[in-house]
Image 1 (cartoon, rainbow, N blue to C red):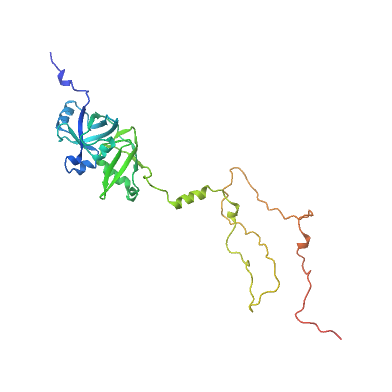
Image 2: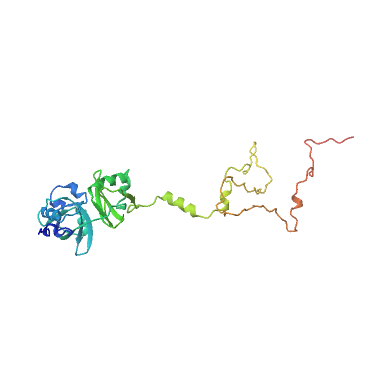
Length: 299
């Protein structure tokens, strides 16, 4: 009796269309579109999307069928000429498209982003004081992110490029009203500082026992001089100084948990089997006495 068929005929269908794409610079001076992740579509697309009851926010997948390259974007306005869409130039480079090439547009529903990892394409990105805050402000012009895409944003009159290395929970995610964690990979061309690499190299070197020796001041290690300038006639053999005592407070890096090591210093031995050389043992008053003046002979 009541015909409701045509009323709900378009519910459940998806939007699918093919347009010729042009960069935003061909449309006019729209710097806001060029530095964002949204496109400009014709009014007929809005009419068709409305009839299909497409869920908001409207997100689209752009496909270059020639090389099967894909990217994702949002829509900013429906004021383009019929049969055309205007997209940012960085998006055309990702899709390997030229002015006037055909691109397929499909509406999609993407999961909300929870994590994204970026890699700056220049070491100049390190000059930014707070990169996460700058990136957060730049991503307000984007609707979604796609893994392996190269996005661009402008900051302090300089253009920066970031490659999207990873997105979660999918390879393409929506970043509209989301709480997303951000991480950065080392910039392309970045080299680790030389001083830091040397410190890491020293940490991996084995511990040398001579490192514990005190290399500070050793008293009476030089040759003495006389006040009258004369040199001593007798040549003395250099005395072998004992090894300096090890410095305290240096940890034992070779220590193994659950073991106790007692360090003993063996006494020197002589060839005949005795533990000490008796000829070198000190004996008190064993020398010959001398007088400062000659003694006169007694009569």
